[in-house]
Length: 144
Image (cartoon, rainbow, N blue to C red; front, side, top):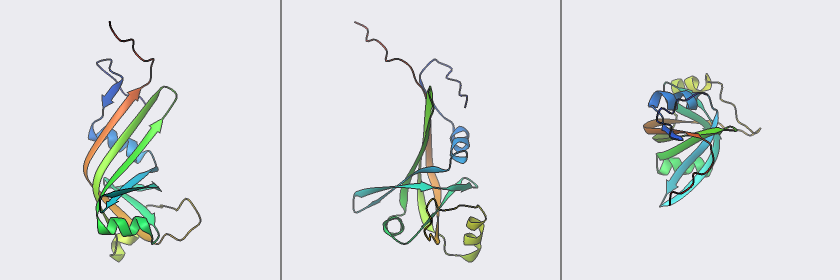
């Protein structure tokens, strides 16, 4: 992955297109939901289509919480030996109910990580996206 840090800064703020390229090239992240002011975080695998994210889930806390409060946060990242990146997406989640929507989600080939039944598909429609790329290096000395 090559990102040009033009000003020599170790932090590069990514464009939406750069951020989507990273999201599309990664298949795991964390989904954050909040109910009654209490946040909850879940590791998920996902698929992307038309700049929307899709996850599979079973009945439980994740599905119940995003049904109560559809505003979610999603984060994915990558860490290499000398660089890292992080993309954060704010969005609205909804469980798919129409058979055509479910069939389209199924066509993405999204498989559960573990051998459990996950019969519900959730679509996350982004409302904002931010991405950053980091170049590792030595801690700078403080000027006296």
